[in-house]
Length: 270
Length: 224
Image 1 (cartoon, each protein chain N blue to C red):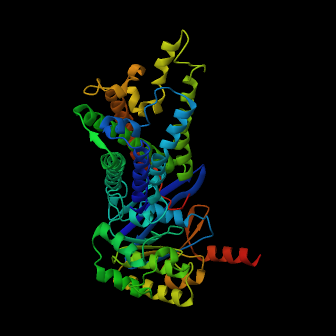
Image 2 (image 1 turned 45 degrees about the vertical axis):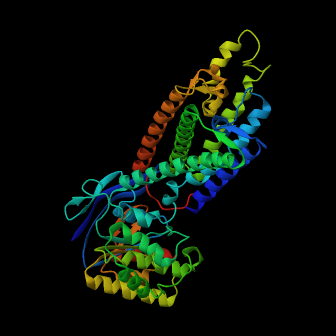
Image 3 (image 1 turned 90 degrees about the vertical axis):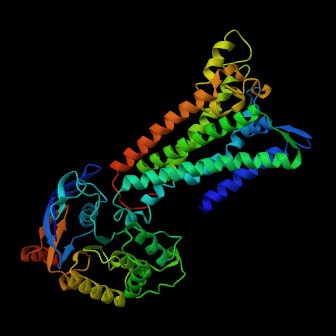
């Protein structure tokens, strides 16, 4: 619980800093705050925006580092004395996975709420129906992604160990952010100039990390928001959320299978 | 109550850890297991407790098969070599947390178990700050706090001083009198010879009743 609170505080600090960095603004649109907290506006892919994306990953990586071993850590210490008493280990895992889901949702809520409240403290925040919809989309999208990655981390840790699992999950995410740099102007998959720009733009959505940039999405109820102007990438909130939901369900299935097959040796592997 | 281990085998990373191990154990008796490091004693105990699944064979308690009719043995207390308790909790809090799973042991039972192993239930030190001997005593306390029908003690004398070993001998005798089935392993043959009603010898995953021949064989090797 202590680690979870540290993660929440860190997430709140990052989103508060983000909103403070807007400066003295009399009127703030709620949708602007939400988009800025969901990997920024990102009008163009360039080195600076990608670096900002990596920096914005910090609270999420911290959450993954702590919560991504929350289930696995029981296999290292204490758990052996727990498991020889536990008559239904699948029920235990189900409960632990549920707790992880609740923590993920709580963490994301705190992240956005801290930003919105800070905005309300320094400026007048204008809400619209579309802004509320956008906030709901972003909370679902970010929470599902975080849940999916932490479950995958726990599952990898069961096979390997916690260091390997964090390195793999964090490494893959950072690799996909780096791969987005190929879409910059003048690069191999230039999406701004040249005859193949339209063809290349379709490739952006095959990068999973691009599905976390709210500004590149569109969806019912938020279509008229100017801040979602980069929707020509062809990503929809519905599509992203559905895909995350399916992958998360698969990851939970893999976690249960891995747990069922593993031998509980009770030795601290890492 | 009869615990039957029937032809169990286990291979991990292409190495045979347990090879066709069989035995029958009755309540009210102490069974000793002797064998060198890596001989398969701990793996056998892990298999009996349900922590690992054997590749072949069955573990049967009064006709009920482990992993088929039950996930774990219903009334078991054990110490596992190399397995630690939760480092951030005090000794008592560790035991309270574990006792909640079954809900059998009351707070009084927990305090009694801690006192029986010569520790103070009100000690505020976290598990990580306890000495090796204190940690081992706490593990013994968690194994006996629920007054289980089966007690598995894997190297229980590890880290214990002379008083601790005497205390353990008393606890094993008392639990035997209570009617518990006790499986005990130790590097120390004296412990086993003093406490066990029957002795088994383990080598390379193979278990044999430790008859005179085996003892002679061992002694011969030691003399060499």
